[in-house]
Figure 1 (spheres, rainbow, N blue to C red):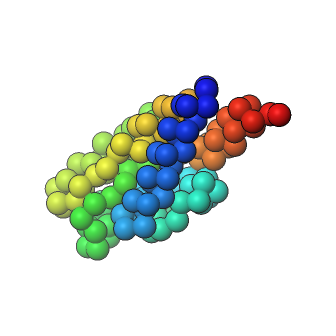
Figure 2 (cartoon, rainbow, N blue to C red):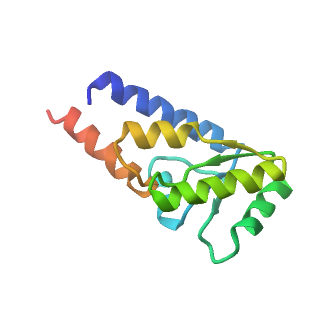
Length: 130
C-alpha cells in the first residue's frame, strides 16, 4: 500500500467518525466496538450478537433512528447477519448504509471489523518506518 492509498483510507475513517456522531453503527460484537473506538470512532453502537433475537435489535434501532451504518464482517457469518439486518430494517423503514463496511474492510485486506485498528496501525508502521 502506498501513502496515497493510506490517506484515502484515513479520509474514509474520518468520514465514518463524522457520520457516527449522528448515525448509529451496527456491529457483530464488543471487539468490533473496541476496534472502532481505537480508531477514534464514537457514538451509538448496537451489537447484532447480543443474546437477543436480531429482529429485536432491529426494532430497537428503528424506534429511534431512520439510518444505521452496517459494519459487520465480510466472512460467511457476517454476510448472513448483514442480509438479515438489511431485510428487517428495510421492512421497518430504516436506511442501511454499507459503504464504510465495503471500502474499509476491502482496502485494509481484512474480513473482520475487529482487525481494522490493528491493520491501520500496521500499515502506518510500514509506511513511516523511518
